[in-house]
Structure formats: C-alpha cells, structure tokens
Image 1: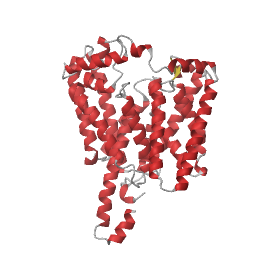
Image 2 (image 1 turned 180 degrees about the horizontal axis):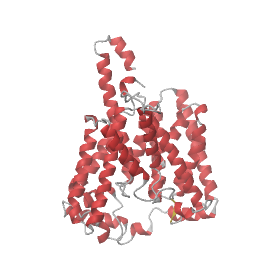
Image 3 (image 1 turned 135 degrees about the horizontal axis):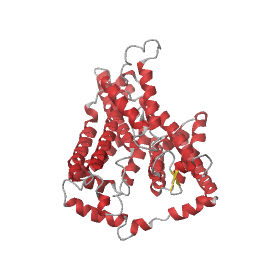
Image 4 (image 1 turned 60 degrees about the vertical axis):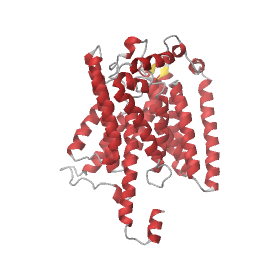
Length: 427
C-alpha cells in the first residue's frame, strides 16, 4: 500500500518494552473488533474497550476529516431527533439509557471511519479480527444448538442458535461480512490461500443456517449474488470468468450438501419446516408485524417529535420491527428523515468506488454487499442497535474517505508530469 495513504507511525516506543505504539494500537483495534462478537450481556466488554480506545485515540490526535462529514452530520441529526423524543418516554430513565447507547453506537461509527481514513491498511486488521470473532461465535452457536458443551442453553434461544449474542436475529447477520470475505478469497485467490476459508467458511454458513433467521438466510443469499456479480463484472479475462463460474457452481453445491446433511437431523428439519414459512402467525395476525407498520406510521405522522424511545410496544404487542418506522417513532421526524438519507448516501458513495483499482477494493466490495442487505432487511427488523451495523457504517465511510484522499493525492503527485507518465501511474 502506498505510503501516501498511511499516517506516520506515532513516534517513540513504550519504555522498557520496546513495543512501537503503532503496533500496540493495531493490537488494541484487533481485540476490540474481536470482542464485537461476544455480547451475551450489556454492557459487553466490547463497549468498555471501544469507549476506552476512543478516548485514548482522541487524546493522541485522531482526526475526523471532512470526507466523513456527511455521515457525521446525518448521525448527529439522527441522535438529536432521539434526544428530543426522550421526554415523551413514560419510563424516562430507560428512554434516556436507550438514547445514550444509540449515541455511543453512532460514535463508534465515526471512530471506525476516522481510523480507516487515517490508515486504510487497518482494514486488514479488522478483517482478521472479524473472521476470528465470527468463527468462535459460530462454533459456540453450533455446539450449543446440538447440546455438545456444558451450559449449551446459554448459546440457544427458542431452540435457535444465537452463539455469543442475545438474539439469533443478530447472530446470523453478524456472520455475513466474514462469510463474504472468505467467499471472495475462494473465488479470486490462488488455491494456496484457501486453507483458512475451507476450514472456517462451513462453520459460518452452518451458524447462519442454525440461527433460523429468515432475514439472515435471505441476506446471505442476496449478498453472495451481489458479490459474485461485482466480481464477474470487474473480471475482463475470459479464463478468470470461467473460473469464477466453475467455483460458484462448486460453492453452491457445497453449501447445498452441507445444508442437506444438517436437515437429515430431525431436530434441524423440524425447526426448518416451521421457520421456512414466508409468513409467520406473528406477521399476519390482527396486530401483527405488517398491521403495525401502517398503524405505526399513522401515529408517527401525527407526532413530529416522535412517540419516545421504547414507547411503541406500549401501544402494540411488540416493537416496530422496521428500522425506518422506528426512526420516526423513536427519533421523531428529524431522525425519520436522517436515517434513510444516511443509508442511501452511504450506498451511493461506496458504490462509486467498487469498480476502481484500489488496494482496499476487495474489502469494499464485501462491505457494500453486506451493507446493502442490512439496509434492505431494515424493512422487517430494527437494526439501529446492532453494533456490527454501526461498524459497517464506519468502515464504509472510512473507505469512501480513503478513496477521495487517494484521488486528491494522486492528482497532486502527478501534477506537472507528462501525459504518458500520468497515464501509466493511473493505470
């Protein structure tokens, strides 16, 4: 990676140990991302460590560049709408705590964006940590589902694997980004680099399946197709395109065989038959998920400042289960407008660099595919409190900013050069 894209390492060494501060910071980042997969209770170790790291990095001079300004402004508007809605909460302490956690998650997105903007090569650290975290999280979910370890019930909820999360519906989507990163490695890397993917990928896919989250199943399918199409469009060599098609066929066959083996177990097949129904009783009942959407939006349109945090389930049997409606009910009209604007702006800005040749393009393609399906699944589930969602948001904007800086520095470095030389460098 070009030196122009990385900030200078912090000067000095830890006295008595000889460890460079830069390496220590990278290790702390790895640990923070790794802990993001272990949220059995709140506050989780992830929150405590990231809060500490944000303070330390800010004191060390971490900068929030203007390139991530749109994300920061829209997040601040979103949080401002929620703060204005807090006084309407019947349980004021619970509503205030809800908004405090939301504000913290928004801050983590800004933190990750600033880190990647400063040094885009940090995506390699995040990738390794995320894959390791997802592997252990999925293993706990699988072992717990089949009752193969002591205390297995801690990793299962309503007969569904939830790994080291509180909810299977978060556990499944959490595994998506490392799944796509490993899939991409299989499809584009030489066989000598397949070892980790061949060991880890089946564990992640089985973990997603055993979450029995219809949203996670659909997200994995759509994200996989999006990534595959991006690779196919970007590949100009016929031989490599043929290789991609052959590997895609082999991958689909492998996943099918893995799922067939899982479905041969009665415990799995019975739950699959129940969860595979497109519409569940709690979706289509009188005050089910779909009925609540129209009624909730009507209520929200009558209250510009929102209903207040955690208030929706005081009127209906369950929560919103639609992040765009929740943006209006819990964050007021200001939050209801800011959230979809932030999602759309992120997709458009990140999508603009998917076909450019950058050192981080492979990572950006995976982030785009996973972020896209999260934006879509928000129609049927609340994703505004998912830690990994805000990390994805921060990673996306860090890559967007890095791309802009790459262009700007490239223009500066090539200023005054002969056209032929500039063309070679641009290629």
